[in-house]
Amino acid sequence: MNYSYPIEETWSKEEIADVVRFYERVESAYEVGVKAKSVLDAYERFKQIVPSKSEEKTYFRSFEKNSGYASFKVVQKARKVDENTQIKC
Image 1 (cartoon, rainbow, N blue to C red):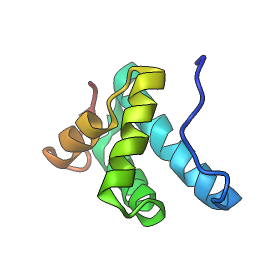
Image 2: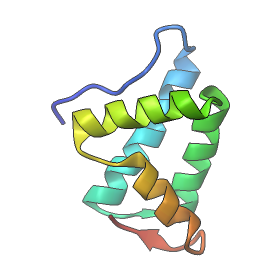
Image 3: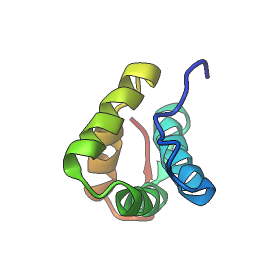
């Protein structure tokens, strides 16, 4: 990994860790596969930290630009399957 995660310096350490955890789930969905529930749980926490849809889109675009991984695609795929299903993009 040769990129940085889009985060805010104003977030608490816990919030930063939770947002990074979400990005890691997205990476896992592309690299090895991940349980849909794991993605959805991490996304739910992400939304508590970033409740604005426009801000979410900004973070998702920045993460995709840096990593090549589309967060929205992963979340959409996780929503369409049973939570115990392993997803891979």
